[in-house]
Length: 286
Image (cartoon, rainbow, N blue to C red; front, side, top):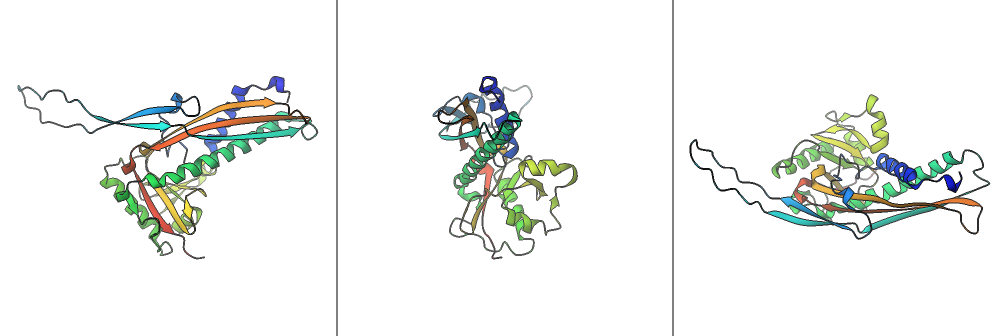
C-alpha cells in the first residue's frame, strides 16, 4: 500500500469501527457517549449538568397554580485525561502482495488492544459506586459463589439495590468474569444467548438475560487476587468520551517499510453513582 494512497480519515473510521466491535464495558448499551462529540484534544473537559428532581403539585380547577419552579442542577466535569497510542511497521518484503489487507489486519489488532485497555480502565471505576449499592466490600468479599444458584440470587439482589435507588429497569446490564458466567449457566433460570445472537456474542460479550439484566462476559472485570468487582447498572450511570486523535502513515527512516501510528484520547466519569451497583465476590477454589 503506497503511503501516497493512505487516507487518515478512512483508517480512523476503520479503527473506530473495530473498536466498537471489541468493547464490552465501552459499548453504548453499557455506558453513554452523550458528550463524545465535544472533545478534541488531551486535557479537554466537558461540563455536565445533572438536573435535580422536580416537585409535583395537585392541580385545582379555576385556581392559580404555584409559581414556576427554578430547578437546581449539579455541575460535574468530564476530563479527557487518558491517552493510548500504537505504532507498527510492515516490512516491504513481508507485504509485497495484498498490502491493504495486511494493513487492515494490523489495524484490527491495534483496535482490539486499545479497546482492551479502555475496558480495563472503565472496569476500574467500580470504586465510584455508591457505598449503599455495594454487596460485599474490598477486603470482605462474599465467599459463597460456588453455592448452586447463588450467582443468579446475587443478580436479583443487585436489581433490588437499583430498584431502591429508583433506577429505570430498562437497559440494565451486568458484566461477569468468565468463571462466574460459567456458574450462572448451570442455573435453569438463566436464559442464554444462542442462534441468531451468536454474532453479537462474539462481538461484544453478550451471553443472555438473567434477573432483569442483559448479561455480558469479560476478562476485564476488575479483581485483586481472587476478589472480583462485578458491576451492574444502566448507561445513564456514567459517560465516556473517546476520540481517535491522530492516525498517521510514514516511512521509517532506517527501514523499507510502511508504518502507521495512532493516538486515542478518552475520559470517563460516573455521573450517577446510585445507578450502578457492585458485587464484591471471591472466586471459589477450582
